[in-house]
Length: 90
Image (cartoon, rainbow, N blue to C red; front, side, top):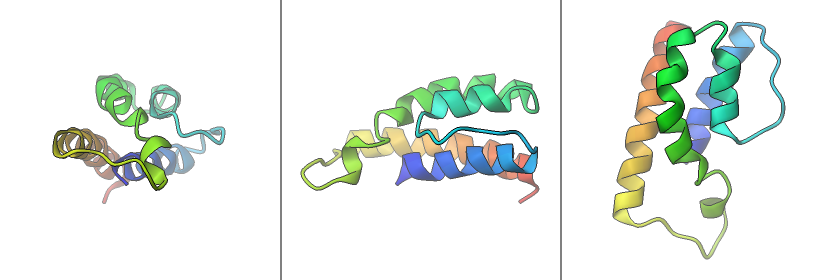
């Protein structure tokens, strides 16, 4: 869920800026696409990288994240959320 949240925020910023983006769950790719309108978001690459592992693996039964993984994912998602909400005026 944390990865999905970050993905939606990045896509919302791209949509608002009228920047095209492909169907992807790769957060690093989405961050790269935001850089022409949000150049300081290059600082979000680390957070995007930490979340990308969760793009598919934990969406399906049989895969579970442990408490440490959940904490790491939550912190990374919050970093992206914070910047995106600020840029979107939310």
